[in-house]
Structure formats: C-alpha cells, structure tokens
Length: 328
Image 1 (cartoon, rainbow, N blue to C red):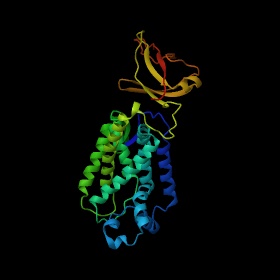
Image 2: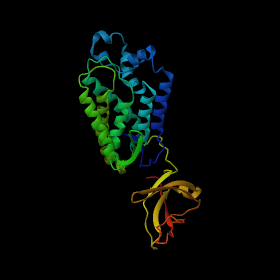
Image 3: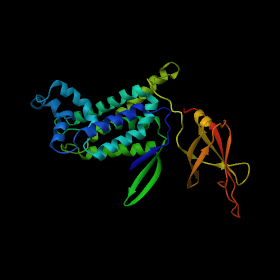
C-alpha cells in the first residue's frame, strides 16, 4: 500500500516540509549507511533507551550527547529505502498540515511529534540496547494530523498485487486508519522483543500525538481573534494544482457536457496549462488543456468532440467554465 498523491491543494509553499526533507537527505549522504562506522553513529546519535535507564551504559555518554540524541535520532536513516519512504510520505502529507498550522508552528509540531514518538518507544522498552533511528515517528505525527484535518481527501494508492500494479483512490481516513492498525498489530506481535527491527510503538506514539496535538491547535485557532494564525514567512502560491479532476454534467444541448475548472488570478491573467482528468462513471480520460491569458471569471473553454455521442457516433462538446479564485 504505497501512497502516490493526495487531492488537497496547499495554498502556500511548504518551505518547512521541503527544508526537513533536505536536511534529512544531507545528513544521510554525509554519514556511511553501513559498516562499523555507522554502528557507532547509531549508538551515539540514535535513541537507545538503556542509555537513560542503566547507569553503567549512561556513563559512556556526556550530558550533551544524551540530550542531543533525543533530537538527532529522527534525522538518521539506515538505508536508502528507509529515508525515501519516510520523506515521500512527509512530502505527500506534510504540505497540507503545514498549510493549516503555518510554517513556524509546523516546525515545532514536527519536532514535538518526533520527541513524543521517541518517549513512547522508550517507556515501553526501558532496557532496550537497540538504537532507534529515523523520521518515522515525526512523520507519523504528520499523518495523525492529516487524519483529523482532511479525512475525506482522496489518496491515490498503489497496491502491488504480485506483478500487477493496482491503482485506487481511497479516502484518507481509510488509508491512514489501515496504516495505524498495521502498526498496532505489528507492535502487539513483537511485544517483549529487543533486537533490530521497526520501532512500531514510536509510530503509534507519533500518530497519537498528531491526532491530539492537531485537535488542540484547531481549538486554539478557533479561539483566536478572527481565526487568525501566524504563518511566520509563509509564501502563498500563485498557481493552483497542475492536475484537475472534473466530473462533467449534461449541458443545455443533449450531447454537450459542462464542468468547472478553477484557476488563480495570476493564472487567469498570464495563462496556464492544466492536465484535466475527465471522469464519467468508471471511465477516466486525461487531457492537456491550455487556458489562454486574460480569462475572466465565468469564461468558457470549448473542447470539441469531448461530449456525449449520439446513435450515429457524432460527438458533442465539453465546455469548461473557468472560475477565478485565490487558493483557499
């Protein structure tokens, strides 16, 4: 179950999300991912619960190292698939959560989610000597927040069935709910085990933090005067999503169809090109549509031959009504 994209368009550039991805990639390529050197890095900068609960192990680390490891573990990864998986999921879900929280508060939220995920793992594995590394717990917090904020968003998901790829769009609450249940089942199945593997409880702790934390944020924003929030440097996007999904309806003429295409004021003025995913029943067709500059709100674009067909096979047209609107 691999997420490919979601259907929620962010209003601002996700500067913190992209920055976090960049930092993780830089850290990954700066340290060796295998061999004895990496083992030393993992024990020094990874999260090892026994370092905080066993005096004989704690004395090998300075106080600064103990504190720093609580943060640094979420920026280390043990392999290319490990980091690519985490960063891809962060890329899909992070921009929308950052859009809601604002860039500054999203950065705090991400770090807090990673810290809480580490604490959750430590509490349930007090004597573990296995280092935990990776951004999975912090990313899980972002997923938990997305679960609350955008439950009806659609997630285009790849299901690899043997050698046949199956692509389905499923609601976000279904995708994330399944993901969370997988973490719980795996955590229950590995209870009491201490060895190399996946820190399932860190994932669970991060997700729970994301759900609870975003609830508090929603309450705080609702109570703010005018519902205002500080983005602290957020940059509003001038363009809407490149891909638009439209569901046509019958027009005034029997064979013609109508649908709506939303663009920003900048795109309406300068012109733009969109990929339109035209859906009718179970059929899906992709078309490249050029929106010329100088379009006004309510203007119509005529796409010849994309309407219904009569009994003799003669097609009608598709009319796209251009709506000019700022990114919400």
